[in-house]
Length: 415
Image (cartoon, rainbow, N blue to C red):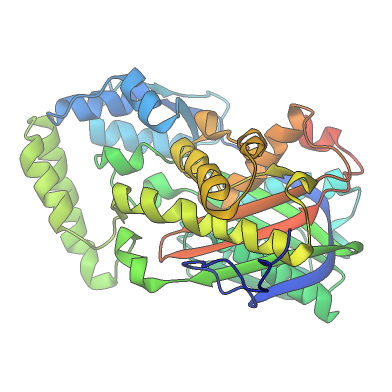
C-alpha cells in the first residue's frame, strides 16, 4: 500500500499524513484488570421503562452489541442509591473491595504487565498515564502508580481527555524511547466513567460504559512502529464533558436530588428535560454525530499508517479499535473498504469484544488484545493496527508488529 499513482494522499477529512512518529519500539508487557461487579442490561432496561421510554434487555443488546459490564462495588452501590435497592441487573462479588480507586486498578494492571514481560519494576524509568475519568487532580494516577510500585523520583506524566488518550500515550511513549530519554516505559490507564463523569439515569449514555484498567510495557526494539494522532474541536459538541468547579457542587447536589425524585415518581419527560439543560459535570453525547464521524477518523488513522509503513492490505492481520460500540467498529471496516480500497476480508480482521466489557475508554484496546490472545488469534510476527477516537474530537492509531510476551500465562491467567 502506498500513496496514489499521482503521489497524492487520499482525501482525508481528519488526518494530516505527515504528522506522525516512526520509531523502533517493541511492546514487551501487557496487563489488564476488570473489577468483579457486574451490571447487566436489565438494570438500564428498568431505568428506560421507568422513564417512559421502555427498552428490553434484548433491545439494548441488539442496538449496542453489549450484554454486561464490569464495575467496582462502589459503582453498584451508587446505582442502588439512585435507582433503588431492588433495582435488577446489579450483581455483587462478596469478595470485592468496598472501595477501589482508579489508582488501585492501575497498579494491578501494571504488576501484571511486568509479570508478562519478566521484568522488575525497578527497571522502569518513565511512567505515562491516561484517563478520561481520573478524579485525582494531583497526584495523578501516573504519580500514584510510580509511588505504589516503589519507584524513585522519575518522569510520571498524565494525559487527561477522552478515549483517544490511549493512542496519544502510545505516541508519547514512542517519542520518549526514540529520543533516548528512557529505556523502559510503563503506560497505564484506568477508567471509571459511569460514576465519575455521567449521570446513571442518562441511560442512553451511561449504559455503554464499563470500568477497568490496563498497562503496557515498552522498550526500544528492532521493529519499526508508527503512531499518529490528531484533534478537531469542530466536532467537540458531539461528545464532551465539563469538569465541575467548586461553585457548581451545591447546584449539582440539588440537581441530582431533583432527578432522583423525578425518577422515582416516573416523571421521565421532566427528568430528561433537566438532563438536557444541565451541562456541567455530566458527559453529553450526540449518538448520531458520533456514529457518523468517529468511524471515519479511525479508518483514516489506520489507512495512513499502513501507507507510511508500505504494508499491503493483507500484511495487516488484526485491527483492534477502541471498543466504543460494535456498530462503530463495523462502520470503520466498511469505510476502509468503500472509501480507501481495502478488500472485503478487512471485516474479518476487526476485533470486537465490546459485548462483555462495554466502553472502557482508554483501557479498551488492551482489554481487546488480551481477549485476542486468550482466543489464540494473535501470533508472533503479526501486524496489528490499534486505532481510537474520543470526545473533543481526538483520534489516532498505533501500528506495530506483535513479537510475543515472555510470560503469556501472566496475561491469560493473572494472579
